[in-house]
Length: 93
Image (cartoon, one colour):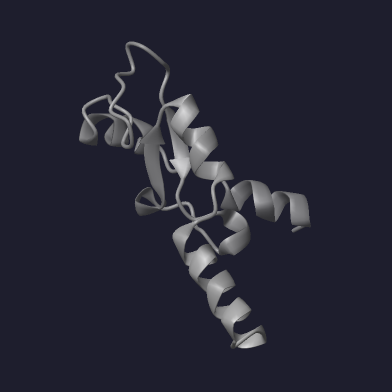
């Protein structure tokens, strides 16, 4: 199996995940609460594939486009903590 096939099969969202999450979050963005009547809500991957995230229902949430962009752009708390730990190791004073 070539790399492209492996990646495409690994990134396939399990059937029904989006519908289940929409119902779970009452058709509202998990962050700001905007309704999917106002904006089409998006399935957002919580753990990036590059960081070992998998295609499991627990790996996703429902976000509006604005929160999804912000979520993908901001430094994640764990990444920030790792950065600070490394910085403190390099510069203890």
